[in-house]
Image 1 (cartoon, rainbow, N blue to C red):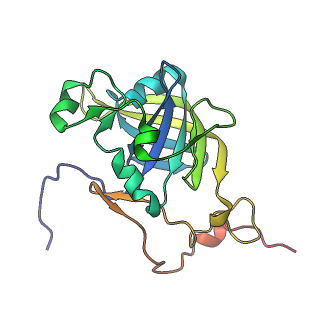
Image 2 (image 1 turned 45 degrees about the vertical axis):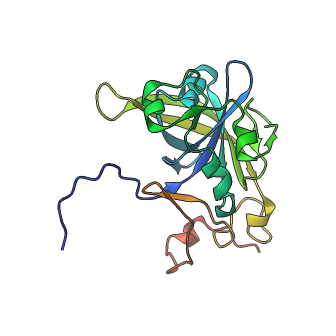
Length: 208
Protein backbone atom coordinates (compact mmCIF):
# COMPACT_ATOMS: atom_id res chain seq x y z
CA UNK A 1 0.00 0.00 0.00
CA UNK A 2 1.37 3.40 -0.95
CA UNK A 3 1.33 6.29 1.50
CA UNK A 4 1.54 10.01 0.84
CA UNK A 5 4.68 11.37 2.54
CA UNK A 6 6.83 14.49 2.37
CA UNK A 7 10.51 13.42 2.19
CA UNK A 8 13.13 16.03 3.05
CA UNK A 9 15.34 14.83 0.19
CA UNK A 10 14.97 12.71 -2.95
CA UNK A 11 18.44 11.14 -3.26
CA UNK A 12 17.28 7.91 -4.84
CA UNK A 13 20.83 6.95 -5.77
CA UNK A 14 23.45 8.65 -7.92
CA UNK A 15 27.22 8.18 -8.17
CA UNK A 16 29.48 10.09 -5.82
CA UNK A 17 31.76 12.52 -7.66
CA UNK A 18 34.86 14.16 -6.23
CA UNK A 19 34.95 17.41 -8.17
CA UNK A 20 38.25 19.26 -8.26
CA UNK A 21 38.30 22.97 -9.08
CA UNK A 22 40.88 25.74 -9.04
CA UNK A 23 40.83 28.26 -6.19
CA UNK A 24 41.72 31.92 -6.66
CA UNK A 25 45.16 31.33 -5.11
CA UNK A 26 45.77 28.46 -7.60
CA UNK A 27 45.36 25.76 -4.96
CA UNK A 28 42.90 22.98 -5.76
CA UNK A 29 39.58 22.48 -3.99
CA UNK A 30 38.17 18.96 -3.76
CA UNK A 31 34.53 18.40 -2.89
CA UNK A 32 32.20 15.40 -2.92
CA UNK A 33 28.87 15.84 -4.69
CA UNK A 34 26.09 13.33 -5.10
CA UNK A 35 23.84 14.80 -7.78
CA UNK A 36 25.33 14.03 -11.18
CA UNK A 37 23.99 12.46 -14.33
CA UNK A 38 25.33 12.16 -17.85
CA UNK A 39 24.05 12.15 -21.41
CA UNK A 40 26.46 11.60 -24.31
CA UNK A 41 29.56 13.73 -23.56
CA UNK A 42 27.92 16.04 -21.02
CA UNK A 43 27.21 15.92 -17.30
CA UNK A 44 24.65 17.84 -15.27
CA UNK A 45 25.84 18.62 -11.76
CA UNK A 46 23.64 19.72 -8.88
CA UNK A 47 25.45 21.81 -6.25
CA UNK A 48 24.76 24.55 -3.72
CA UNK A 49 25.49 27.87 -5.42
CA UNK A 50 26.96 29.12 -2.13
CA UNK A 51 29.78 26.55 -2.23
CA UNK A 52 33.43 27.19 -3.04
CA UNK A 53 33.09 24.69 -5.88
CA UNK A 54 30.46 26.76 -7.66
CA UNK A 55 32.41 29.98 -7.13
CA UNK A 56 35.43 28.32 -8.73
CA UNK A 57 33.37 26.93 -11.61
CA UNK A 58 31.86 30.32 -12.38
CA UNK A 59 35.29 31.98 -12.40
CA UNK A 60 37.50 29.31 -14.03
CA UNK A 61 34.88 27.45 -16.14
CA UNK A 62 36.62 24.07 -15.77
CA UNK A 63 36.92 21.09 -13.42
CA UNK A 64 37.70 17.40 -13.11
CA UNK A 65 34.99 14.88 -12.24
CA UNK A 66 36.67 12.08 -10.29
CA UNK A 67 34.56 8.96 -9.71
CA UNK A 68 35.62 6.88 -6.68
CA UNK A 69 35.02 3.15 -6.44
CA UNK A 70 33.57 1.65 -3.27
CA UNK A 71 37.02 1.00 -1.79
CA UNK A 72 37.56 4.78 -1.51
CA UNK A 73 34.55 5.36 0.74
CA UNK A 74 36.68 6.27 3.78
CA UNK A 75 38.56 8.92 1.79
CA UNK A 76 35.27 10.39 0.58
CA UNK A 77 33.79 10.40 4.07
CA UNK A 78 36.83 12.28 5.40
CA UNK A 79 35.74 15.18 3.14
CA UNK A 80 32.30 15.39 4.74
CA UNK A 81 31.53 18.60 6.62
CA UNK A 82 34.57 20.37 5.15
CA UNK A 83 34.44 23.50 3.00
CA UNK A 84 36.87 25.55 0.98
CA UNK A 85 34.96 28.73 1.83
CA UNK A 86 36.71 31.05 4.29
CA UNK A 87 35.03 32.37 6.32
CA UNK A 88 32.60 29.47 6.53
CA UNK A 89 29.05 30.60 5.62
CA UNK A 90 26.71 30.80 8.60
CA UNK A 91 24.40 28.07 7.34
CA UNK A 92 27.35 25.68 7.05
CA UNK A 93 28.58 26.60 10.52
CA UNK A 94 25.16 25.57 11.83
CA UNK A 95 25.50 22.26 9.98
CA UNK A 96 28.90 21.60 11.53
CA UNK A 97 31.21 22.44 8.61
CA UNK A 98 34.76 23.73 9.10
CA UNK A 99 37.21 25.38 6.72
CA UNK A 100 39.89 23.09 5.27
CA UNK A 101 42.36 24.42 2.68
CA UNK A 102 44.05 21.04 2.04
CA UNK A 103 41.27 18.71 0.98
CA UNK A 104 43.59 16.25 -0.77
CA UNK A 105 45.77 15.87 2.32
CA UNK A 106 42.80 15.50 4.65
CA UNK A 107 41.23 12.83 2.43
CA UNK A 108 44.62 11.11 2.00
CA UNK A 109 44.28 11.32 -1.77
CA UNK A 110 46.90 12.20 -4.39
CA UNK A 111 46.62 15.11 -6.87
CA UNK A 112 48.09 14.48 -10.31
CA UNK A 113 48.21 16.90 -13.28
CA UNK A 114 45.40 17.00 -15.80
CA UNK A 115 46.07 17.17 -19.54
CA UNK A 116 43.82 20.07 -20.53
CA UNK A 117 42.25 21.79 -17.52
CA UNK A 118 44.08 23.32 -14.55
CA UNK A 119 42.50 21.42 -11.60
CA UNK A 120 44.20 18.18 -10.61
CA UNK A 121 42.88 14.67 -11.11
CA UNK A 122 42.55 12.32 -8.14
CA UNK A 123 45.09 9.55 -8.76
CA UNK A 124 43.18 6.91 -6.77
CA UNK A 125 39.90 7.35 -8.67
CA UNK A 126 39.47 4.83 -11.53
CA UNK A 127 37.53 7.39 -13.60
CA UNK A 128 38.79 10.97 -14.08
CA UNK A 129 36.92 13.25 -16.51
CA UNK A 130 38.31 16.66 -17.40
CA UNK A 131 35.47 19.04 -18.18
CA UNK A 132 34.59 22.61 -19.12
CA UNK A 133 31.50 24.54 -18.03
CA UNK A 134 28.92 25.11 -20.75
CA UNK A 135 25.84 26.42 -18.93
CA UNK A 136 24.82 27.37 -15.37
CA UNK A 137 21.16 27.37 -14.33
CA UNK A 138 19.40 28.31 -11.10
CA UNK A 139 17.57 25.28 -9.80
CA UNK A 140 14.65 24.86 -7.45
CA UNK A 141 12.81 27.57 -5.53
CA UNK A 142 13.08 31.28 -6.35
CA UNK A 143 15.39 32.70 -5.06
CA UNK A 144 17.40 29.54 -5.57
CA UNK A 145 20.31 28.35 -3.44
CA UNK A 146 21.05 25.53 -5.88
CA UNK A 147 22.74 25.47 -9.26
CA UNK A 148 22.42 22.96 -12.10
CA UNK A 149 25.71 23.15 -13.99
CA UNK A 150 26.19 21.56 -17.40
CA UNK A 151 29.75 20.55 -18.20
CA UNK A 152 31.24 18.98 -21.32
CA UNK A 153 33.84 16.22 -21.04
CA UNK A 154 37.03 17.10 -22.93
CA UNK A 155 39.34 14.26 -21.79
CA UNK A 156 38.69 10.91 -20.13
CA UNK A 157 41.20 8.99 -18.01
CA UNK A 158 40.05 5.43 -17.26
CA UNK A 159 41.97 2.84 -15.24
CA UNK A 160 42.72 -0.05 -17.60
CA UNK A 161 41.63 -2.52 -14.92
CA UNK A 162 37.97 -1.61 -15.50
CA UNK A 163 38.08 -1.71 -19.30
CA UNK A 164 36.58 -4.57 -21.29
CA UNK A 165 39.12 -7.17 -22.29
CA UNK A 166 40.53 -6.34 -25.70
CA UNK A 167 38.74 -2.98 -25.89
CA UNK A 168 40.22 0.51 -25.49
CA UNK A 169 37.06 2.61 -25.26
CA UNK A 170 34.54 0.50 -23.33
CA UNK A 171 34.20 0.20 -19.57
CA UNK A 172 33.20 -3.25 -18.32
CA UNK A 173 30.26 -2.83 -15.91
CA UNK A 174 31.20 -6.12 -14.24
CA UNK A 175 34.59 -4.64 -13.29
CA UNK A 176 33.40 -1.16 -12.25
CA UNK A 177 31.86 -0.75 -8.80
CA UNK A 178 31.13 2.96 -8.31
CA UNK A 179 30.39 4.49 -4.94
CA UNK A 180 26.71 5.45 -4.76
CA UNK A 181 24.99 7.98 -2.50
CA UNK A 182 21.49 6.76 -1.67
CA UNK A 183 19.49 8.99 0.72
CA UNK A 184 22.77 10.35 2.20
CA UNK A 185 24.20 6.87 2.86
CA UNK A 186 27.02 5.13 0.96
CA UNK A 187 26.33 2.06 -1.15
CA UNK A 188 27.96 0.06 -3.91
CA UNK A 189 26.16 -1.86 -6.60
CA UNK A 190 25.29 -5.54 -6.40
CA UNK A 191 25.36 -8.27 -8.98
CA UNK A 192 23.61 -7.84 -12.31
CA UNK A 193 19.98 -8.88 -11.84
CA UNK A 194 19.00 -9.40 -15.50
CA UNK A 195 20.49 -8.94 -18.97
CA UNK A 196 19.40 -5.74 -20.73
CA UNK A 197 18.12 -5.72 -24.29
CA UNK A 198 19.53 -2.21 -24.57
CA UNK A 199 23.12 -3.28 -23.80
CA UNK A 200 23.92 -4.64 -27.30
CA UNK A 201 23.07 -1.25 -28.82
CA UNK A 202 26.02 0.33 -26.98
CA UNK A 203 28.31 -2.69 -27.02
CA UNK A 204 31.63 -2.70 -28.92
CA UNK A 205 31.28 -3.50 -32.62
CA UNK A 206 31.79 -7.13 -33.56
CA UNK A 207 35.31 -7.64 -34.87
CA UNK A 208 35.55 -9.42 -38.24
